[in-house]
Image 1 (cartoon, one colour):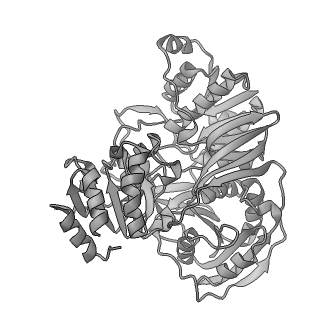
Image 2 (image 1 turned 45 degrees about the vertical axis):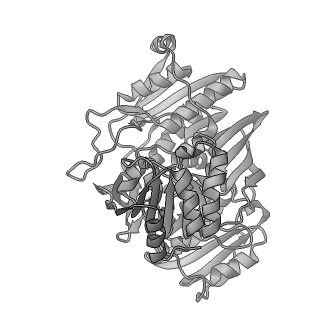
Image 3 (image 1 turned 180 degrees about the vertical axis):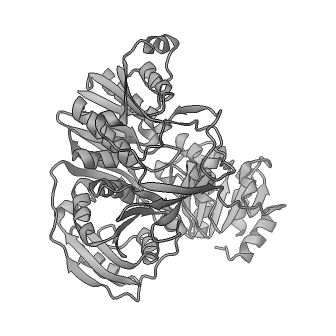
Length: 309
Length: 249
């Protein structure tokens, strides 16, 4: 089987989310990559070095500069004439593009795969991860999105893919990019961080989040996260949200501070290697999944932890 | 401008899903069903656009069993003007739903179709994007703000690193994210009024759409259970445990 993997990048470097998709694709067959964007030579070179990559298709065109699905999906559908499976990371970019490709190919997509069970058989979460479905496609071609935390990351070196320019596609003329407000952070991204410190509703305010959560994260070089309750209450921006409707994470260590552990939050972090919970309610559901639980008032325990660790 | 709002009847978000012991799916017998929360946000957004004078008519559509009428009545009680039920007892996949919605969009010629970004049962997150592909219209997914301006719409999207705004030519497809709005509750008088609003019943065959599944569900199982670890007595013990797993500043 010949697979085509969407390379997620920021214009200058390959994003980590791509690497797990390469691993998933390699379980199906030959791995080809697609780098679409404007001025993406450096990204293409970096992509070609990913272990196990055969060919890197590079579509360099201003119309692909902001991943607009109206422009990118027809390009991918075109390339799928000579590939058997299209795989994209289950990120907001991948989720935006892949179903549009699937419909152009008249294929039913399989979303957020957790494992490859056979040539056309996969597992995926349903009901916010409260159930796992094993599904099998009847299509000749596959369109898949891949949950990044479910697959190991492919090595970023050792590959020797051949770079090939693609001239197809252009501006569909139906959409344009206006602007973005991407939070600039001097810390790791949530989805690739080794340590995450998350705060919940119990913090009570954005000031307390700054005062209690941020110093611990700073000390550990950790990414910052939050429960949906904390986001809804306005303590932090939406892109901090860990959970089924936010980001799915699986760091080495996850600190859940003042987070009760609603199903929807657990769905986003329960694959973390070590979970630490600090909560004053000893019956909080978070303790049922925590490796280390501390029943304590977070306003005194967390600063103490920050001081001692 | 007319707005089409597709809505899905799903297991209520407060009900904990139980996997059936025979592994065929999640038990939906005798449990509370409601409108998919992201679709509720879609209905609300359409109503706000009508209140602003941007939209003139809101048509709610559902593909599902006879009981999905209740979901459509909820949309009508919130403020939709009329409804279409495409009735089927089969489980219909996003691709087939998108084909049915494309046929309805062809007939109704809406300026906007506002859908939930995903249904909270199958968590597919596909229908809006697929409908956009089939119609050839632009898409603004995971919307946190929708501003119609003449013959285009600016959609602010919730993306992984923050927010992104795109400008789409109308007609266009929008899918909703959580922060777009807070849906209203239907008032009792409006619930009563909704009972007399028009609701057409169709079938997938009326639109010439084959809804046979393309993806077979082999089995549905419980997720692996993570077992609880230990409770530590104080911060000092926690620091020691963390150091043992390699966590220190």
